[in-house]
Every structure is written in structure tokens, then in C-alpha cells.
Length: 160
Image 1 (cartoon, rainbow, N blue to C red):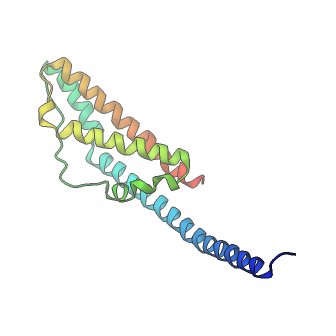
Image 2: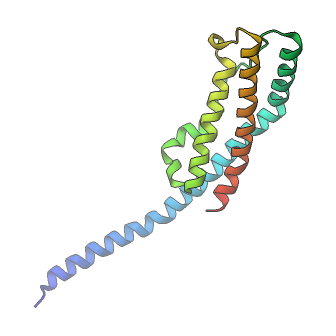
Image 3: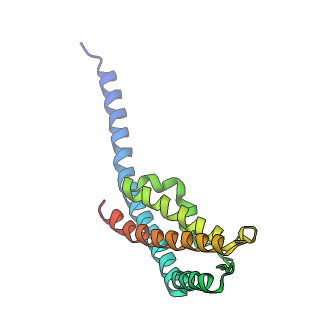
């Protein structure tokens, strides 16, 4: 014959576990939605800044100048502010988001950090016209990639 105290104890434990899980699920869902919205907003802001400041057009103009002037002209842009505060504050939570979104978010921010390094590191200025041409082509390619991925992220987040 089962012990009634044991059955009661097991019932209390199971009830407590289910109650705690039930209380945590809405909180986790809300945190996930807030994170998705904040990341999507930050990505959109970064893309709008790049677009409004005309970095892609400027890189293309410099590429044309390198070809005609036959000299190592370079794109420099001082970056004095951190535009990735939402991502950096929540990087450990990106795994809560849908797999494809988390993947693209990591690629987007790594691409942006690479671009920042390319235009701010004075130790990597090109020495020759060909080096300048190749590096500008690389920056142009990274800018296109950032836009492609950045525009996909909100769609990936909405799909969840």
C-alpha cells in the first residue's frame, strides 16, 4: 500500500516545479521578444547611419580616384562612439532567439566590427595603389554584406 505522506510530498514537489516553470515561461517569452526588438532596432540604426553618412558611395568614389590618380588613397572614418551597446550587453542571450536570427546577428556584428577596424586602424593604411584598390573592394563587399544580412535579421526575428 502506498504511503500517503510520500504521495502528498511528491504531489507538492511536482506542483511547485510546474508552478515555477509556469511563472518563468511568460517572463522568458517577454525577455525574448524585448531582446529581438532591441537587436532589430540597433541593426536598423547602424544601417541607417551607414546609409545617411554615405560610406558605401564614398568608398566607391575613392575606388575611382585610386584608379585615376594611381596612388594609395584610403577611406578613414573616426568611430568615437560604440554603436553596438544592445548587442554587447546581451550577447550571452542571443541564443534565446531563433537559430537563423542568432546566426545572422553574429555575422552582422562581426562584419560591422571588421569594417570599423578597417577604417580606424592607422597601422593598416595601404602602401600601393593596388593594395588600396583591393582593400577598398573588400570594404565595399563587406558593406554590401552588412546590408544584406542586416535587412534579413528583422525577417528572421519575425518568423519566430
